[in-house]
Length: 245
Ligand SMILES: [Fe+2]
Ligand SMILES: [Fe+2]
Image 1 (cartoon, protein in one colour):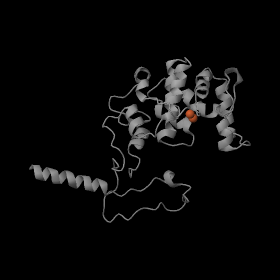
Image 2 (image 1 turned 45 degrees about the horizontal axis):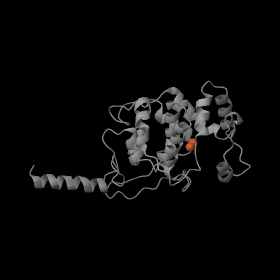
Image 3 (image 1 turned 90 degrees about the vertical axis):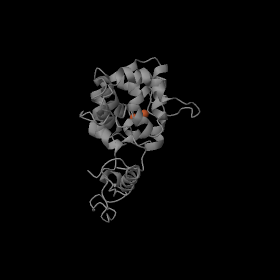
Image 4 (image 1 turned 180 degrees about the horizontal axis):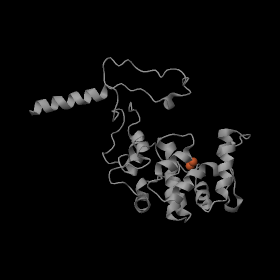
């Protein structure tokens, strides 16, 4: 190929990529539309369907790391960073600091509903079981005070859910199970350091946690999403959320 041909081929590939048909997943639109109805799709006009990188999103490196996901796919992770810093300041162990840094990653970049469970599942192949156990159950423990460590029912929840909100039976059951578990305190410490009323002028950088992550997160050499782990597909979906299949 000549240089000109190569340039033309690259331009063609780019315009095809920009022009792919995107059909949204049902879960992205359920509620805004009735999921029992056919999922609306744009006319394809003979165009190809989205099967990889969505050009509307920043491109991820070929072998993405945990921090790449923070940088390119998660919103500003102030809440996570501030919680992890508070945990560090409170002198908890590194595993709990890591758990605080990652406890809400499902909210940051994947699915909000049942976020403790999704976050734990994303991380399970890469961190100690105790870390994901704590992350899974922090969702339920947040609703239940523990005076022994000074944890009260969050003011914020009163505002968000109303004073008469009662956690559903499955959350109550999860709480009862967690309360009697040997790792209860790991999960409880996440709730203790789960910080909502932070000072917006305080900036915490991701790099502050490079060492903790380096020591306790087993970054796959193929990149998150490409290592055939039991949750690799979930990382790929965050990377390429609009793939047709
Ligand atoms: Fe949470
Ligand atoms: Fe949180």
